[in-house]
Image (cartoon, rainbow, N blue to C red):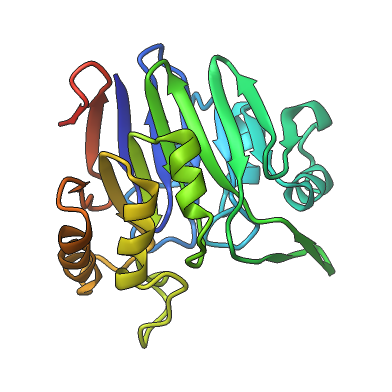
Amino acid sequence: MVTFRYLGISFFELTTGNGVKILIDPCITKNVLCPIVVDDVTDVDLILVTHGAPDHMGDAIEIQKKTGATLVSDSAVKIHAERMGVENDKVISILWGDQIEVQGVTVKAVECRHINLFQSGDRYLSGIPLSFIIHPEDGVRIYNAGDTALFSDLKLIGRLHRPNIALIPIGGAPELTGGYSHLPPQEASLAAQWIGADVVIPTHYQPDAEEVAAFTKYLTLLAPSIRVLAMKPGDTRTYDRHTLQVT
């Protein structure tokens, strides 16, 4: 059993059946949708950061130093984390194609189409944005897109890794207006079809916008067998690998 808690934008907390706690893109302080504060976060084992943008790296550095969790991202985020006082052996840099294991959780980095450019002190760092294939336990495969535009090798990612669950952005960050999005609902539905997961959880959207309805409509036309599970910030769901059901 893997438990998902959605906390706004692209921030998820995953808890495995063995009690290992994973944070993905833990943006709290600058996340107007997040129902928790940093002080609420305890006992974290693994932090995954797709890229250094403020709405994705967020509070990862503070949380790592508070909890001693292992932080996994690309080389630029690793450099920044070490500058901010994270111990070298507590931050792991990976590139597309790399696979690591931390406390029984397997994480593989895969390609995405985005940018990783962010301020670190008085300078900017640039690295490689990541998507992740996460194996929190046997039989469970989670594709976390982070931020990406549409590209045809999403078909290959789906074919190779056959995720059960996909976390796919469908809109802009809450502070953005005017429909500004790297993967708008119609393109996101095509990405979801190519990935081919049983369940898709939309991310990176404003809850009161129309993006979820549009995404669901398009995906129903393209791949009616794929279930769309829209979660509100604070919602918790559990995935059972034996029944392949999310409740």
